[in-house]
Image (cartoon, rainbow over all chains, first blue to last red; front, side, top):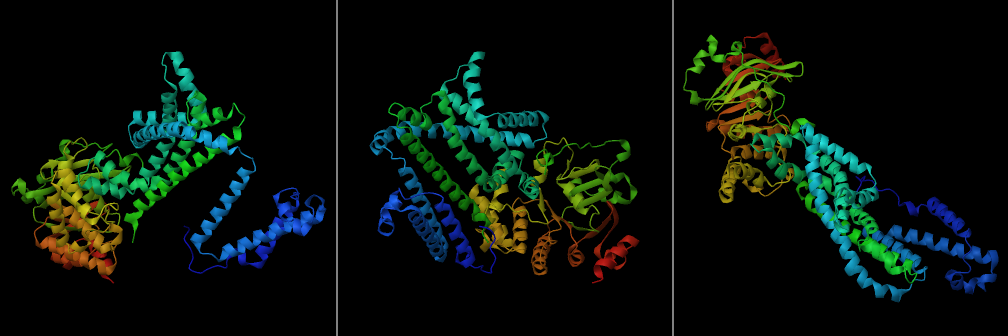
Length: 324
Length: 282
């Protein structure tokens, strides 16, 4: 939440000038499309007669009704409490999304036939690849972050080269280099391990910077206090600095975790049977591309949403020491 | 914070030229060397420190014996905090010798933990660990450094929280306490290690007037119980009532060192007189 003022401002959508201008914009926008041949036209048949012959009158009537409904909706939502507002907006946007998906005329039996395999094989592989990579990436990141903060020239050199190199190369390129390049040197790695390797070192490079910033954000007084009691470097790091850096790190780490989940789709170029790969291959033979791609997209979204929930839980958990 | 935080004792060089002989060789302090060595907790001899080209400490001599209460005062930037931060090697000195509990402090020492275990420190900004409860703040060091079993650490912690009169706050987090309470927790946290000397680095400078009183009260009661203390503070009332010796520093040098009565009633140096006139004016 932004830091709110104690003086309440007028609800924006209850200002006549605002609502009128929104109305005009929406009306103008929908006048640009001829919606008489859609479901909307059918619904408006009582008012405009035969939709296809209603001409400009029909077009205007439809746009007008949409604009009125849109503005009425805004005004009504303006009255609701905060949580209800959020819920209604989410619900409406979801319905619009479903309407959009429905307009593809998807073959639903095809989806329900392939969905179980998409989940048991695809989702499981995606989760497996991204979880293992996340663990490795976090380990690499902690070590590299400490190395980057240290006064050891070797450690700093290696860590900064690492972050520079792996943040600078496209992830797809790294995946190809590891899977196709290394065998030329006699190192043959299977598709899944090389995918995990590429994802780990890439995400690790980004996380290094997150950890470094988190560690640096801790007041030096904490170092002094723990040192003055005789804590060594390791103990200070483990018990004092990192636990305090975690709350700072969580939001950017949430980003990184979600990005990792979706970046794992790039491993599909190695023929790993994860979500994206299966979505493409299952739909291909019968030309049901859209069915599978949309299913996979929604699954990715659900998985990311789970990560978002975990992130907000963690943020709440760690904020307990900040209560006043 | 850059690299300096992680690499602790870097770039220090102790000089051991014959000209830097211990303070005991100078006649005016020789009587202080006579008591048994075990009696001396902190011995600083000709200590100098530079920040780059700026000289923060110049040939400081100070001996702290067991049970002594010493107050260091002086204008800001005079090197008082720097000096006591050298006593547990939070800062490095570049010349002279500091010996704490018989252990010489230098950049290559391997037993710095031994020194720090026995030297408690209280900071101006408390520096409590905000992610731990008050109780855990007090239990951490005994458990992790001394290997005290948890039950016993808890008992000791509660005992010292009782001592600073806030046992009821044991399960709260530092952010939930007032400044004065936090500083008393910080004192209890240091006491839990049962140190042989306590260093106070302007412990009341960031507190409200009312809270200053409760912290000074705690410190006075510590002093009554015979704790060896070195306090950097501007609380002259405390200095007068509690200190065995008051040390006045200016520009990195010890200007005057005297018993509180002498110090406040007939200061010898012009600089001391001016300082006292300034702080006692209001």
